[in-house]
Length: 115
Image (cartoon, rainbow, N blue to C red; front, side, top):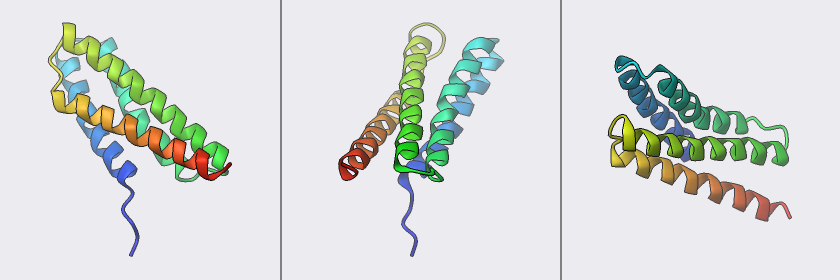
């Protein structure tokens, strides 16, 4: 039986949530902010997906590192949006924080195992 890939599942679900925020921002004519949040928020999953087909451990860690940076950027946009434009559901802050912790853990574990 194949083990579930938690990162793959969580980042895919997160991207779906991001698209809902994107739609809301567009409906309120916040096009630039919508564009920013959809790029960073969906890139997390795209990069973790790419990491699954990495050609080396270094490539794997690099792709996850990019996903981590995108998660941090998404958190930044959440903070701005929540203060000024729309209320971001606190659950979204929890979800992005969980993704950040998960990615850091995988990166650190991979680096430790390859020393």
